[in-house]
Length: 341
Ligand SMILES: [Zn+2]
Image (cartoon, rainbow, N blue to C red):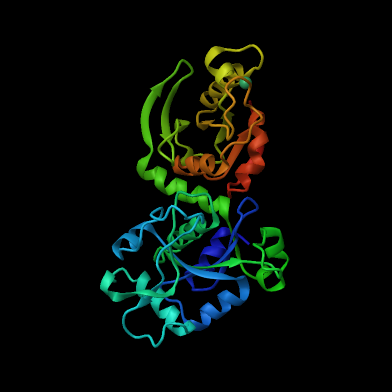
């Protein structure tokens, strides 16, 4: 099932399984802005784990929920706030009906801090949407579905109570029927959305031809991943894309121990000869400046997100960067191999 179908399910108020093989916790996620008590029952029966209300930072701030990191004993990737209740309309707070009402109140953009009673019965968590985890992916699912960035999340646990991997979750009969929204694909959409606003771009003439250089780093701390865009990839049918893994000695110093520099030059020249294409200068996940980095893993979600932000849809990957084809496909890109260069 495609991400588009998962988004449709989520938008219609149905539960969706969110995560991928790299996520330690997989969630069943449900839009919180219209959740009912029986929806929470479905959610809890499917996931079996703890149910929390994931909130975007802007909602947690508006509701003045405790910021993460205030307690130095905190170890959870989900920063739980003090549990909340709706201030009006609940009886006791424990029932699924009451907890669903509290979630709807928290998700409502008109809610102010006095609409909540603290401590209550719903665990709210401020989600770091820049994170690589499945909770951040679920928030992006809500945004893509045009629902409030407030999501009821139930961690998936196996029959022993341990956090279930995606493989185990998909092996469960009831969970296998839920649409799956892959974490990497959702992260690439989140990166594309933010890069469209925050990427830095300039015209870059090179000896091979003219490019638009687009630089973006989601964490804002490290050297940016850069895409060199030639022509208009949005108008091209399967534009040529070359993903170059940054290799300091090869690229900058012309090391003869590898041919990264020659590959870089050849790829840029080939894209110019084609008329349209994108050259991505991708950071390796492990930094090892003293040796060639060509075979290191890259942040596929970041690369895919930057490509999306540059207007790339279905693409042709250059022959020499085919090593990353599967990584980009796992982020939902339609990748054809076998391009020149
Ligand atoms: Zn190299």
